[in-house]
Length: 546
Ligand SMILES: [Zn+2]
Image (cartoon, rainbow, N blue to C red; front, side, top):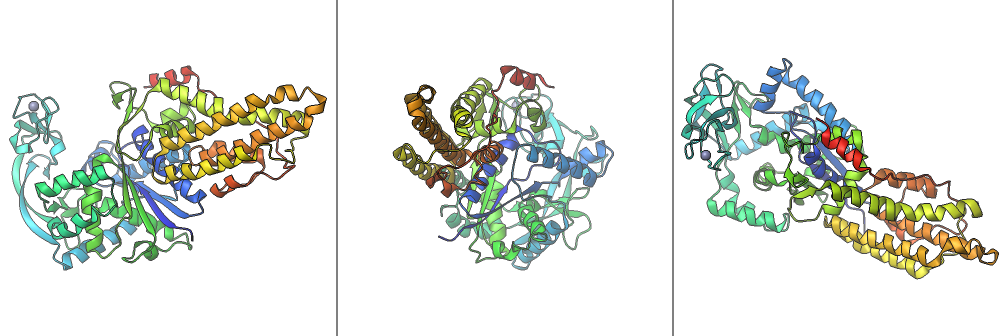
Protein backbone atom coordinates (compact mmCIF):
# COMPACT_ATOMS: atom_id res chain seq x y z
CA UNK A 1 0.00 0.00 0.00
CA UNK A 2 1.45 3.35 -0.95
CA UNK A 3 1.75 5.92 1.82
CA UNK A 4 -1.26 8.17 2.36
CA UNK A 5 -0.99 11.96 1.89
CA UNK A 6 -2.72 13.71 4.76
CA UNK A 7 -3.33 17.33 5.69
CA UNK A 8 -4.56 17.82 9.24
CA UNK A 9 -5.76 21.03 10.91
CA UNK A 10 -6.84 22.06 14.37
CA UNK A 11 -9.44 24.82 14.93
CA UNK A 12 -7.69 28.20 14.98
CA UNK A 13 -7.47 29.58 18.56
CA UNK A 14 -8.73 33.15 18.89
CA UNK A 15 -5.89 35.70 19.15
CA UNK A 16 -7.26 37.55 22.17
CA UNK A 17 -5.51 35.57 24.89
CA UNK A 18 -3.02 32.84 25.74
CA UNK A 19 -3.74 29.13 25.23
CA UNK A 20 -5.42 27.26 28.08
CA UNK A 21 -5.95 23.58 28.79
CA UNK A 22 -9.15 23.56 26.70
CA UNK A 23 -7.15 24.44 23.58
CA UNK A 24 -4.48 21.95 24.57
CA UNK A 25 -7.00 19.11 24.75
CA UNK A 26 -7.81 19.49 21.06
CA UNK A 27 -4.25 20.26 20.00
CA UNK A 28 -2.93 17.18 21.83
CA UNK A 29 -5.70 14.95 20.43
CA UNK A 30 -4.74 16.12 16.94
CA UNK A 31 -0.99 15.86 17.53
CA UNK A 32 -1.25 12.25 18.76
CA UNK A 33 -3.09 11.33 15.55
CA UNK A 34 -0.55 13.16 13.37
CA UNK A 35 2.41 11.50 15.09
CA UNK A 36 0.71 8.11 14.76
CA UNK A 37 0.20 8.67 11.01
CA UNK A 38 3.85 9.59 10.55
CA UNK A 39 4.94 6.41 12.36
CA UNK A 40 2.84 4.46 9.85
CA UNK A 41 5.02 5.91 7.08
CA UNK A 42 2.29 8.26 5.84
CA UNK A 43 3.03 11.81 4.75
CA UNK A 44 1.18 13.95 7.24
CA UNK A 45 1.24 17.74 7.45
CA UNK A 46 -0.30 19.55 10.42
CA UNK A 47 -1.19 23.24 10.17
CA UNK A 48 -2.95 25.67 12.44
CA UNK A 49 -2.76 29.37 13.22
CA UNK A 50 -4.60 32.03 15.12
CA UNK A 51 -7.94 33.53 14.25
CA UNK A 52 -6.96 37.20 14.34
CA UNK A 53 -10.07 39.04 13.16
CA UNK A 54 -13.23 40.44 14.72
CA UNK A 55 -14.66 43.10 17.00
CA UNK A 56 -13.33 41.68 20.33
CA UNK A 57 -9.75 41.92 19.05
CA UNK A 58 -10.29 45.44 17.76
CA UNK A 59 -11.67 46.55 21.14
CA UNK A 60 -8.97 44.80 23.15
CA UNK A 61 -6.26 46.41 21.03
CA UNK A 62 -7.87 49.81 21.53
CA UNK A 63 -7.90 49.30 25.31
CA UNK A 64 -4.23 48.25 25.29
CA UNK A 65 -3.41 51.23 23.04
CA UNK A 66 -1.74 49.08 20.38
CA UNK A 67 -2.74 48.15 16.85
CA UNK A 68 -4.75 44.92 16.33
CA UNK A 69 -1.83 43.70 14.18
CA UNK A 70 0.61 44.15 17.10
CA UNK A 71 -1.79 42.57 19.58
CA UNK A 72 -2.42 39.47 17.47
CA UNK A 73 1.27 39.04 16.70
CA UNK A 74 2.10 39.12 20.44
CA UNK A 75 -0.58 36.55 21.14
CA UNK A 76 0.54 34.42 18.21
CA UNK A 77 4.10 34.31 19.58
CA UNK A 78 2.79 33.20 22.97
CA UNK A 79 0.71 30.46 21.30
CA UNK A 80 3.79 29.23 19.43
CA UNK A 81 5.75 29.02 22.71
CA UNK A 82 2.99 27.01 24.40
CA UNK A 83 2.58 24.71 21.40
CA UNK A 84 6.32 23.90 21.49
CA UNK A 85 6.12 23.45 25.26
CA UNK A 86 3.48 20.73 24.89
CA UNK A 87 5.49 18.97 22.14
CA UNK A 88 2.87 19.64 19.46
CA UNK A 89 4.53 18.76 16.15
CA UNK A 90 2.98 21.53 14.04
CA UNK A 91 4.34 22.33 10.59
CA UNK A 92 2.96 25.86 10.57
CA UNK A 93 1.20 28.25 12.96
CA UNK A 94 0.04 31.08 10.75
CA UNK A 95 -2.55 33.84 11.22
CA UNK A 96 -5.81 34.68 9.43
CA UNK A 97 -4.52 38.25 9.07
CA UNK A 98 -2.15 37.28 6.26
CA UNK A 99 -1.75 38.10 2.60
CA UNK A 100 -2.37 34.45 1.64
CA UNK A 101 -5.66 34.49 3.50
CA UNK A 102 -6.75 37.79 2.01
CA UNK A 103 -6.09 36.58 -1.54
CA UNK A 104 -7.90 33.28 -0.99
CA UNK A 105 -10.86 34.89 0.81
CA UNK A 106 -11.35 37.44 -1.97
CA UNK A 107 -11.06 34.76 -4.63
CA UNK A 108 -13.55 32.45 -2.93
CA UNK A 109 -16.00 35.33 -2.34
CA UNK A 110 -15.75 36.44 -5.97
CA UNK A 111 -16.33 32.93 -7.31
CA UNK A 112 -19.48 32.64 -5.19
CA UNK A 113 -20.63 36.09 -6.23
CA UNK A 114 -20.25 35.18 -9.92
CA UNK A 115 -22.39 32.10 -9.37
CA UNK A 116 -25.18 34.00 -7.65
CA UNK A 117 -24.49 32.51 -4.24
CA UNK A 118 -24.15 35.93 -2.59
CA UNK A 119 -27.07 38.32 -2.11
CA UNK A 120 -27.41 41.72 -0.44
CA UNK A 121 -30.12 42.50 2.10
CA UNK A 122 -30.84 45.44 4.36
CA UNK A 123 -30.91 44.55 8.04
CA UNK A 124 -31.78 46.47 11.17
CA UNK A 125 -29.02 46.37 13.74
CA UNK A 126 -28.25 47.85 17.14
CA UNK A 127 -26.01 50.90 16.86
CA UNK A 128 -24.06 52.85 19.48
CA UNK A 129 -24.76 56.54 18.72
CA UNK A 130 -21.80 57.72 20.85
CA UNK A 131 -19.14 55.28 19.57
CA UNK A 132 -20.67 55.49 16.08
CA UNK A 133 -20.54 51.78 15.47
CA UNK A 134 -22.83 48.81 15.04
CA UNK A 135 -22.93 46.61 18.14
CA UNK A 136 -22.58 42.83 18.13
CA UNK A 137 -24.99 41.11 20.58
CA UNK A 138 -22.25 40.54 23.11
CA UNK A 139 -21.59 44.27 23.48
CA UNK A 140 -25.13 45.04 24.57
CA UNK A 141 -26.35 44.37 28.10
CA UNK A 142 -29.67 44.96 29.81
CA UNK A 143 -32.45 43.34 31.84
CA UNK A 144 -33.78 39.95 30.77
CA UNK A 145 -37.18 40.29 29.03
CA UNK A 146 -38.39 37.08 30.67
CA UNK A 147 -37.13 37.11 34.28
CA UNK A 148 -35.94 40.73 34.63
CA UNK A 149 -32.46 39.66 35.78
CA UNK A 150 -30.19 42.70 35.52
CA UNK A 151 -27.05 43.03 33.40
CA UNK A 152 -27.58 40.20 30.91
CA UNK A 153 -26.00 39.79 27.46
CA UNK A 154 -27.82 40.81 24.30
CA UNK A 155 -28.37 37.25 23.11
CA UNK A 156 -29.17 35.15 26.17
CA UNK A 157 -29.89 35.31 29.90
CA UNK A 158 -27.45 33.54 32.18
CA UNK A 159 -30.04 33.43 34.98
CA UNK A 160 -33.10 31.86 33.31
CA UNK A 161 -31.53 30.62 30.05
CA UNK A 162 -33.84 32.60 27.75
CA UNK A 163 -32.53 33.39 24.26
CA UNK A 164 -33.66 36.53 22.44
CA UNK A 165 -32.44 39.37 20.24
CA UNK A 166 -30.91 42.55 21.71
CA UNK A 167 -34.02 44.55 20.78
CA UNK A 168 -36.00 42.47 23.31
CA UNK A 169 -33.78 43.54 26.25
CA UNK A 170 -35.19 46.00 28.77
CA UNK A 171 -33.04 49.06 29.52
CA UNK A 172 -30.44 48.06 26.93
CA UNK A 173 -27.08 49.83 26.88
CA UNK A 174 -23.82 49.61 24.98
CA UNK A 175 -21.00 48.15 27.06
CA UNK A 176 -18.58 50.41 25.16
CA UNK A 177 -20.13 53.81 25.97
CA UNK A 178 -23.11 53.12 28.23
CA UNK A 179 -25.36 54.79 25.63
CA UNK A 180 -28.78 53.36 24.80
CA UNK A 181 -28.43 51.62 21.43
CA UNK A 182 -30.57 52.81 18.57
CA UNK A 183 -31.58 50.70 15.57
CA UNK A 184 -30.03 51.48 12.24
CA UNK A 185 -30.25 50.00 8.76
CA UNK A 186 -27.28 48.51 7.00
CA UNK A 187 -26.85 46.66 3.71
CA UNK A 188 -25.22 43.28 4.35
CA UNK A 189 -23.90 40.44 2.20
CA UNK A 190 -25.43 37.01 2.69
CA UNK A 191 -24.13 33.61 1.62
CA UNK A 192 -27.00 31.57 0.19
CA UNK A 193 -26.60 28.42 2.22
CA UNK A 194 -29.96 27.24 0.88
CA UNK A 195 -28.36 26.86 -2.59
CA UNK A 196 -26.31 24.03 -1.09
CA UNK A 197 -29.05 22.21 0.80
CA UNK A 198 -29.11 19.19 -1.52
CA UNK A 199 -25.31 18.93 -1.58
CA UNK A 200 -25.10 19.28 2.22
CA UNK A 201 -27.79 16.69 2.92
CA UNK A 202 -25.78 14.17 0.91
CA UNK A 203 -22.38 15.26 2.17
CA UNK A 204 -23.27 15.25 5.87
CA UNK A 205 -24.54 11.66 5.59
CA UNK A 206 -21.63 10.28 3.57
CA UNK A 207 -19.35 9.23 6.45
CA UNK A 208 -17.42 12.47 6.84
CA UNK A 209 -18.82 13.17 10.31
CA UNK A 210 -19.38 11.38 13.60
CA UNK A 211 -22.95 10.06 13.95
CA UNK A 212 -23.72 12.50 16.77
CA UNK A 213 -22.81 15.40 14.48
CA UNK A 214 -24.93 14.05 11.62
CA UNK A 215 -27.91 13.85 13.98
CA UNK A 216 -27.34 17.42 15.14
CA UNK A 217 -27.26 18.57 11.51
CA UNK A 218 -30.49 16.73 10.77
CA UNK A 219 -32.11 18.93 13.43
CA UNK A 220 -30.77 22.01 11.66
CA UNK A 221 -32.03 20.77 8.30
CA UNK A 222 -35.52 20.20 9.75
CA UNK A 223 -35.51 23.68 11.28
CA UNK A 224 -34.63 25.04 7.82
CA UNK A 225 -31.30 26.44 6.66
CA UNK A 226 -30.85 30.20 6.87
CA UNK A 227 -28.84 32.50 4.62
CA UNK A 228 -25.59 33.42 6.35
CA UNK A 229 -24.61 37.04 7.02
CA UNK A 230 -20.96 37.20 5.96
CA UNK A 231 -20.36 40.96 6.27
CA UNK A 232 -19.66 43.38 9.11
CA UNK A 233 -19.71 47.17 9.13
CA UNK A 234 -16.76 49.44 9.82
CA UNK A 235 -15.05 49.79 12.28
CA UNK A 236 -13.94 46.16 12.19
CA UNK A 237 -10.61 44.33 12.18
CA UNK A 238 -10.63 42.10 9.12
CA UNK A 239 -10.49 42.14 5.31
CA UNK A 240 -12.46 44.67 3.27
CA UNK A 241 -14.99 43.09 0.93
CA UNK A 242 -13.88 43.63 -2.70
CA UNK A 243 -15.40 46.85 -4.05
CA UNK A 244 -16.40 48.11 -0.57
CA UNK A 245 -14.84 50.79 1.64
CA UNK A 246 -16.81 50.30 4.87
CA UNK A 247 -17.71 46.63 4.87
CA UNK A 248 -15.61 43.70 5.94
CA UNK A 249 -15.78 39.93 5.72
CA UNK A 250 -17.22 38.46 8.93
CA UNK A 251 -14.30 36.69 10.66
CA UNK A 252 -16.10 33.35 10.43
CA UNK A 253 -15.90 33.53 6.64
CA UNK A 254 -12.12 33.90 6.53
CA UNK A 255 -11.29 31.76 9.61
CA UNK A 256 -11.62 28.32 7.95
CA UNK A 257 -10.04 29.71 4.77
CA UNK A 258 -7.16 30.31 7.21
CA UNK A 259 -6.46 26.54 7.07
CA UNK A 260 -5.80 26.85 3.34
CA UNK A 261 -3.77 30.03 3.88
CA UNK A 262 -1.60 28.43 6.56
CA UNK A 263 -0.89 25.52 4.23
CA UNK A 264 -0.20 27.87 1.30
CA UNK A 265 2.25 29.82 3.46
CA UNK A 266 3.99 26.55 4.37
CA UNK A 267 4.16 25.42 0.72
CA UNK A 268 6.19 28.53 -0.11
CA UNK A 269 9.09 27.16 1.95
CA UNK A 270 8.46 23.43 1.47
CA UNK A 271 9.08 22.43 -2.16
CA UNK A 272 7.87 18.89 -1.38
CA UNK A 273 4.32 20.19 -0.82
CA UNK A 274 1.92 21.42 -3.49
CA UNK A 275 -1.09 23.56 -2.61
CA UNK A 276 -3.05 22.42 -5.66
CA UNK A 277 -2.35 18.74 -5.07
CA UNK A 278 -4.09 19.02 -1.71
CA UNK A 279 -6.91 21.44 -2.50
CA UNK A 280 -7.99 20.87 -6.11
CA UNK A 281 -11.42 19.36 -6.67
CA UNK A 282 -10.04 15.95 -7.65
CA UNK A 283 -7.33 15.73 -5.02
CA UNK A 284 -6.57 12.21 -3.77
CA UNK A 285 -4.89 13.61 -0.66
CA UNK A 286 -6.89 13.38 2.58
CA UNK A 287 -8.03 16.44 4.54
CA UNK A 288 -8.98 16.27 8.22
CA UNK A 289 -10.26 19.03 10.50
CA UNK A 290 -10.20 18.55 14.27
CA UNK A 291 -12.59 20.93 16.07
CA UNK A 292 -14.44 21.54 19.36
CA UNK A 293 -18.17 20.88 19.54
CA UNK A 294 -19.08 24.59 19.77
CA UNK A 295 -18.12 25.26 16.14
CA UNK A 296 -19.83 22.36 14.34
CA UNK A 297 -22.20 24.71 12.52
CA UNK A 298 -19.36 26.62 10.87
CA UNK A 299 -17.34 23.54 9.92
CA UNK A 300 -19.95 20.97 8.95
CA UNK A 301 -22.40 23.26 7.10
CA UNK A 302 -20.82 26.53 5.91
CA UNK A 303 -17.34 25.25 5.24
CA UNK A 304 -18.15 22.31 2.92
CA UNK A 305 -20.62 24.58 1.05
CA UNK A 306 -18.04 27.37 0.73
CA UNK A 307 -15.46 24.91 -0.65
CA UNK A 308 -17.86 23.09 -2.96
CA UNK A 309 -19.20 26.27 -4.53
CA UNK A 310 -15.74 27.77 -4.98
CA UNK A 311 -14.52 24.69 -6.83
CA UNK A 312 -12.27 23.24 -4.12
CA UNK A 313 -12.19 19.77 -2.59
CA UNK A 314 -14.19 19.13 0.59
CA UNK A 315 -12.89 17.59 3.85
CA UNK A 316 -12.35 13.83 4.13
CA UNK A 317 -13.57 14.00 7.71
CA UNK A 318 -14.25 16.43 10.53
CA UNK A 319 -13.47 15.14 14.03
CA UNK A 320 -15.29 16.89 16.88
CA UNK A 321 -14.26 16.68 20.52
CA UNK A 322 -16.06 17.64 23.74
CA UNK A 323 -15.12 20.25 26.32
CA UNK A 324 -12.63 19.94 29.14
CA UNK A 325 -13.62 20.23 32.79
CA UNK A 326 -11.19 20.45 35.71
CA UNK A 327 -12.03 18.49 38.87
CA UNK A 328 -15.60 18.17 37.61
CA UNK A 329 -16.06 21.93 37.09
CA UNK A 330 -16.29 24.00 33.95
CA UNK A 331 -13.00 25.89 33.58
CA UNK A 332 -13.61 29.16 35.36
CA UNK A 333 -11.35 31.97 36.48
CA UNK A 334 -13.34 32.59 39.67
CA UNK A 335 -13.19 28.93 40.75
CA UNK A 336 -9.46 28.68 40.11
CA UNK A 337 -10.01 25.91 37.55
CA UNK A 338 -8.96 28.04 34.58
CA UNK A 339 -5.47 26.79 33.81
CA UNK A 340 -3.23 28.37 31.21
CA UNK A 341 -0.83 26.24 29.18
CA UNK A 342 2.15 28.20 30.48
CA UNK A 343 1.02 27.82 34.12
CA UNK A 344 0.77 24.05 33.74
CA UNK A 345 4.30 23.83 32.33
CA UNK A 346 5.74 25.71 35.32
CA UNK A 347 4.77 22.82 37.58
CA UNK A 348 4.34 19.66 35.50
CA UNK A 349 5.86 18.08 32.43
CA UNK A 350 3.87 18.29 29.16
CA UNK A 351 3.81 14.52 28.83
CA UNK A 352 1.83 14.11 32.03
CA UNK A 353 -1.06 16.00 30.42
CA UNK A 354 -0.58 14.23 27.09
CA UNK A 355 -0.74 10.80 28.71
CA UNK A 356 -3.64 11.64 30.98
CA UNK A 357 -5.71 13.03 28.10
CA UNK A 358 -4.91 9.93 26.04
CA UNK A 359 -6.39 7.72 28.79
CA UNK A 360 -9.59 9.78 28.54
CA UNK A 361 -10.05 10.50 24.83
CA UNK A 362 -12.40 8.49 22.62
CA UNK A 363 -14.11 9.00 19.28
CA UNK A 364 -17.39 10.18 20.78
CA UNK A 365 -18.15 13.83 21.51
CA UNK A 366 -17.99 13.59 25.28
CA UNK A 367 -16.71 16.16 27.71
CA UNK A 368 -13.66 14.99 29.60
CA UNK A 369 -12.54 15.80 33.08
CA UNK A 370 -9.09 16.31 34.58
CA UNK A 371 -9.67 14.92 38.07
CA UNK A 372 -6.28 15.67 39.58
CA UNK A 373 -6.26 12.75 42.06
CA UNK A 374 -6.76 10.41 39.17
CA UNK A 375 -4.22 12.36 37.11
CA UNK A 376 -1.48 11.76 39.72
CA UNK A 377 -2.44 8.10 40.01
CA UNK A 378 -2.36 7.48 36.23
CA UNK A 379 1.08 9.00 35.72
CA UNK A 380 2.69 7.38 38.76
CA UNK A 381 1.10 3.98 38.30
CA UNK A 382 1.06 3.63 34.48
CA UNK A 383 3.94 5.66 33.09
CA UNK A 384 6.44 5.37 35.94
CA UNK A 385 5.30 2.24 37.80
CA UNK A 386 4.52 0.01 34.82
CA UNK A 387 6.11 1.26 31.60
CA UNK A 388 9.44 2.83 32.63
CA UNK A 389 9.89 0.24 35.37
CA UNK A 390 10.32 -2.55 32.78
CA UNK A 391 13.38 -0.82 31.35
CA UNK A 392 14.92 0.22 34.65
CA UNK A 393 14.68 -3.22 36.28
CA UNK A 394 16.05 -4.98 33.17
CA UNK A 395 18.75 -2.46 32.29
CA UNK A 396 20.29 -2.60 35.75
CA UNK A 397 21.54 -6.20 35.30
CA UNK A 398 22.42 -5.83 31.63
CA UNK A 399 24.64 -2.90 32.57
CA UNK A 400 26.33 -4.38 35.65
CA UNK A 401 26.77 -7.97 34.42
CA UNK A 402 26.66 -8.05 30.63
CA UNK A 403 28.42 -4.91 29.43
CA UNK A 404 25.21 -3.24 28.18
CA UNK A 405 24.76 -5.95 25.53
CA UNK A 406 21.62 -7.98 24.89
CA UNK A 407 21.72 -11.78 24.85
CA UNK A 408 21.81 -13.84 21.64
CA UNK A 409 18.28 -15.17 22.05
CA UNK A 410 14.71 -13.93 22.35
CA UNK A 411 13.80 -15.82 25.52
CA UNK A 412 10.04 -15.96 24.94
CA UNK A 413 9.23 -15.61 21.21
CA UNK A 414 5.53 -16.27 21.85
CA UNK A 415 5.29 -13.31 24.23
CA UNK A 416 7.10 -11.13 21.69
CA UNK A 417 4.70 -12.13 18.86
CA UNK A 418 1.70 -11.53 21.11
CA UNK A 419 3.05 -8.02 21.73
CA UNK A 420 3.51 -7.47 17.99
CA UNK A 421 -0.02 -8.69 17.24
CA UNK A 422 -1.48 -6.40 19.89
CA UNK A 423 0.18 -3.59 17.93
CA UNK A 424 -2.31 -4.15 15.10
CA UNK A 425 -5.25 -3.62 17.44
CA UNK A 426 -3.58 -0.61 19.06
CA UNK A 427 -3.02 0.93 15.62
CA UNK A 428 -6.72 0.44 14.89
CA UNK A 429 -7.59 2.30 18.10
CA UNK A 430 -5.30 5.23 17.25
CA UNK A 431 -6.62 5.45 13.70
CA UNK A 432 -10.24 5.61 14.94
CA UNK A 433 -9.36 8.09 17.74
CA UNK A 434 -10.05 5.55 20.49
CA UNK A 435 -6.98 6.58 22.47
CA UNK A 436 -8.39 5.43 25.83
CA UNK A 437 -8.80 1.91 24.42
CA UNK A 438 -5.24 2.05 23.03
CA UNK A 439 -3.84 3.08 26.44
CA UNK A 440 -5.72 0.25 28.18
CA UNK A 441 -4.32 -2.28 25.73
CA UNK A 442 -0.78 -0.87 26.08
CA UNK A 443 -0.93 -0.97 29.88
CA UNK A 444 -2.17 -4.57 29.75
CA UNK A 445 0.98 -5.39 27.74
CA UNK A 446 3.09 -3.55 30.33
CA UNK A 447 1.45 -5.65 33.05
CA UNK A 448 2.30 -8.83 31.12
CA UNK A 449 5.93 -7.75 30.72
CA UNK A 450 6.24 -7.02 34.44
CA UNK A 451 4.58 -10.34 35.30
CA UNK A 452 7.04 -12.12 33.04
CA UNK A 453 9.99 -10.55 34.86
CA UNK A 454 8.39 -11.24 38.26
CA UNK A 455 7.91 -14.90 37.36
CA UNK A 456 11.45 -15.36 35.98
CA UNK A 457 13.11 -13.60 38.96
CA UNK A 458 16.32 -12.44 37.27
CA UNK A 459 17.52 -11.04 40.64
CA UNK A 460 17.76 -14.66 41.92
CA UNK A 461 19.14 -16.11 38.66
CA UNK A 462 21.97 -13.58 38.65
CA UNK A 463 23.29 -14.90 41.98
CA UNK A 464 23.59 -18.44 40.59
CA UNK A 465 26.81 -18.83 38.55
CA UNK A 466 25.17 -21.62 36.49
CA UNK A 467 22.22 -19.39 35.44
CA UNK A 468 23.99 -16.31 34.11
CA UNK A 469 22.90 -16.80 30.52
CA UNK A 470 19.32 -17.39 31.67
CA UNK A 471 19.40 -14.15 33.67
CA UNK A 472 20.83 -12.41 30.62
CA UNK A 473 18.08 -13.77 28.35
CA UNK A 474 15.29 -12.76 30.76
CA UNK A 475 16.54 -9.18 31.16
CA UNK A 476 17.05 -8.90 27.39
CA UNK A 477 13.49 -10.11 26.88
CA UNK A 478 12.36 -7.32 29.23
CA UNK A 479 14.14 -4.80 26.98
CA UNK A 480 12.57 -6.27 23.81
CA UNK A 481 9.09 -5.92 25.34
CA UNK A 482 9.89 -2.42 26.59
CA UNK A 483 10.87 -1.42 23.05
CA UNK A 484 7.48 -2.54 21.71
CA UNK A 485 5.79 -0.37 24.34
CA UNK A 486 7.97 2.61 23.38
CA UNK A 487 6.66 2.24 19.82
CA UNK A 488 3.05 2.13 20.99
CA UNK A 489 3.38 5.10 23.35
CA UNK A 490 5.52 7.25 21.06
CA UNK A 491 2.58 9.26 19.60
CA UNK A 492 1.59 10.24 23.16
CA UNK A 493 5.01 10.48 24.86
CA UNK A 494 7.37 11.78 22.16
CA UNK A 495 10.08 13.08 24.49
CA UNK A 496 10.22 9.97 26.65
CA UNK A 497 10.28 7.92 23.43
CA UNK A 498 13.21 9.98 22.13
CA UNK A 499 15.20 9.35 25.31
CA UNK A 500 14.23 5.66 25.21
CA UNK A 501 15.46 5.45 21.60
CA UNK A 502 18.79 6.91 22.74
CA UNK A 503 19.00 4.35 25.54
CA UNK A 504 18.08 1.53 23.13
CA UNK A 505 20.48 2.84 20.43
CA UNK A 506 17.84 1.94 17.86
CA UNK A 507 17.25 5.11 15.81
CA UNK A 508 13.80 6.63 15.32
CA UNK A 509 11.24 3.87 15.84
CA UNK A 510 8.47 3.35 13.28
CA UNK A 511 5.30 1.33 13.88
CA UNK A 512 6.49 -1.62 11.76
CA UNK A 513 9.55 -2.06 14.04
CA UNK A 514 7.23 -3.77 16.52
CA UNK A 515 7.58 -7.00 14.52
CA UNK A 516 11.37 -7.30 14.65
CA UNK A 517 13.31 -7.66 17.90
CA UNK A 518 16.61 -5.88 18.45
CA UNK A 519 19.42 -8.08 17.00
CA UNK A 520 21.34 -10.48 19.19
CA UNK A 521 24.20 -8.91 21.12
CA UNK A 522 22.79 -5.39 20.45
CA UNK A 523 24.48 -2.79 22.64
CA UNK A 524 22.51 -0.33 24.78
CA UNK A 525 23.76 2.80 26.50
CA UNK A 526 23.50 3.33 30.20
CA UNK A 527 19.92 3.68 31.43
CA UNK A 528 18.83 7.07 32.80
CA UNK A 529 15.43 7.64 34.46
CA UNK A 530 12.86 8.41 31.74
CA UNK A 531 10.01 9.88 33.80
CA UNK A 532 9.46 11.37 37.24
CA UNK A 533 6.65 10.57 39.65
CA UNK A 534 4.17 13.41 40.11
CA UNK A 535 4.19 14.77 43.66
CA UNK A 536 0.75 15.98 44.85
CA UNK A 537 2.56 19.17 45.95
CA UNK A 538 3.21 20.01 42.27
CA UNK A 539 -0.51 19.80 41.56
CA UNK A 540 -1.34 21.94 44.61
CA UNK A 541 1.15 24.56 43.46
CA UNK A 542 -0.48 24.58 40.01
CA UNK A 543 -3.98 24.93 41.43
CA UNK A 544 -2.94 27.71 43.79
CA UNK A 545 -1.35 29.76 41.06
CA UNK A 546 -3.32 32.91 40.33
ZN1 LIG B 1 -33.76 35.71 32.42
